[in-house]
Every structure is written in structure tokens, then in C-alpha cells.
Amino acid sequence: MGLPTMGVNMSKKSLFLLLIPLFIVTFVQAQSDDPAQLRVMQLSYLPELGSAIDIDLDGSVIFEDIGWPFATDYVEVAAGAHTLTTTLVDQPDASASTVLTLESGHSYSVIVNGDYSQQVTFVVVEETELLAEAGGSTAIIVNLTEQAISNVTINDAPVLSEIPAGDYGFLALPPASATIGGMVGELEYSEIFTPHANTDFLIAVRLQPSGEPQVIYHRSSRLTIAEYLRSVHEGAQFAQVAGLIAQTDILDSLAEDGAYSLFLPVNRVVDNLIAANLIPDAAQLGGLFATHITPQNLPPYTLPHYQTLTMLAGNTVSLNFGQTDSGYWEIEGVPILWDVRLTNGVIYGIDGVIEVSQ
Image (cartoon, rainbow, N blue to C red; front, side, top):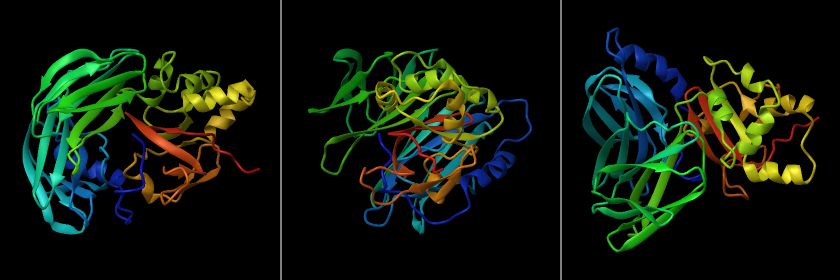
């Protein structure tokens, strides 16, 4: 799924990164139990008024301006019962709440779905055991429709007979491009998934106002950026750029306790550069990749707060979230296609190479 310009509130607010320390101090108290991990996927809206929400836990805001259809990063929460409330930005009467009971050391995703003028529901996914094996990827399929999803297939081979309404199922994904499909009543849907390495997909199936099924998904991994790129297998997305990065010391320079956002060309871009004999030699590659990395964790719901970014190489790049020829958000005119969330930052797949002015 690409990164569209619609559904993202552009108002200037306190950044998410400033909220994390307060949140941890408030909700993760000194105790022998491990905290729970919690993230929220935002699929709620109010027609004609907006689709960006603030997220509150037990009376304290933990995320602001989360636009449709983005998922937050994970945050640590003390085990026990908590009240989660979502409120449409600048519309305090448009809100919904649920009570979560979180277990120590467990991992959860909460999908907020629906129309605030009618009904908003919360689907809580307990995903602790969903851990991608080395070189492989996994998927959670969450059924947000009001009827069962039947005949779930991977490349036309049956894998799940049914996912009840409001429930979810787990899948192991093959290391090659795969089509995941299913049936909602008599309506068939399918989506092609490009292979990734060590990636967990959170996939939501919902019905559009037209009644047609819609597939929305989010990529993440429990690895650091360096671990992720070193684990990429042949044929997976970023395999080409990971091979080039391995010729440099860039990954060694990314501190595990640091935070980074990488804007990396997808495989087809590198393939075209190789075919045109435009890949720099190993001595220059490190400098090239330093122009594509900023030392900040900027997931998609915070990225629109920035008009420019300063990269590791010292170059400044511009960002465009308005109307573009490509239809995507852009960095220095290069389309930003999608993101993979990692434990110490995010990798954005881009459809080109960032050019640095001399």
C-alpha cells in the first residue's frame, strides 16, 4: 500500500517523539513484570469532517494526529486493565472507547474502525506468538466486515477455511511474491504481496461504502534496521540495495540505541541503475547512502510535520505532501512508495535515487 496525500492532518502539534517519555513514565511503572507492547491502527473517520485521531490511554494522550490508514509504533504499557479512547482531531464529541486487558510481556495491535456518526469498533489482536522466522514473513488477517471471510488462499492454495467477523487469523508467507485472497460473502478479493525478509504484515479486510472489499496493510519487523538489512534474502524487497549497503560501513555506523529513517530505492530502481552501469564504486557508495538517511525516527504519521530533512551526509532534502505528478508523497521529487517499521526507526521504499546538488 502506498503513502497517499489524503487523510493526513497537517496541523502543527506536539510531536509524537516528545510524548513517548511521558507515556513510559506514566504507564510503565517499576515492577518485576515485563510491560506489554501496544500499537494502534487508525481506520476510523467522520464523513466530510476528518479522519485523524488523538489516542488517549487512561486519561493521557499517547499519540496525536494519527491519520487514516496509518498504524502507530509500539509503546510499552504496564500489564493490567486500561481504557483506550480515540477522538477525532478538533471534534471532541466524535470519540469512542474500549477497555483493554493487557498481559505482561505480550504484544497487541488494536484496530480502530468505523464511522463516528454511526459506530466505531475496536478489534484487539493478541499477536505475541506471531514472530517471523529468519528469512520469512508472517501475516495477521483481521476481518473488519460483518460477515465471515471464507476460503483464505495463498496463490490459490487454501490456508484458512474461515475468519469470523471481528476475528483474525495467522499466516506464514512464502519467500516469493504471493497473492493472498478470500471471500466476503459472495465477493472475492485478492492482493499481491511483494516478498520481504523477517517482516510481519498486519492486514485489515474491510468493506468500502460501495460494498466492495478493501485490503489495508502495514509492515513491521522486530529487528533493528541493521539486523533487518543484513537478513534480507535473495529475491526479497531491498535485496539489491542491501547488497550494495553491505559493501559499505553504513550499517556499522547506525547505533542500536539511535533512531533513523532510511529512504532506500526499491529493487527495480537498482536493477535499472545496474543495467545502465550507473552504480558508484564501493568507495563512493557509503557517501551516497549517507545522503538517504536522517538520524530521526519519522514514521508516516509524523513525517508531514517536516518540510525538509537534514541527512547524515549533511545534505538537506525537501518533502512534498501535496498534489504530485506521481500521486505519492515525495522526497526531492522521488515518490515515497511505502514503509517498513523497525525497532529503531523506519525504512521507506522510494522509486528513485535522491540527487544531491553540488
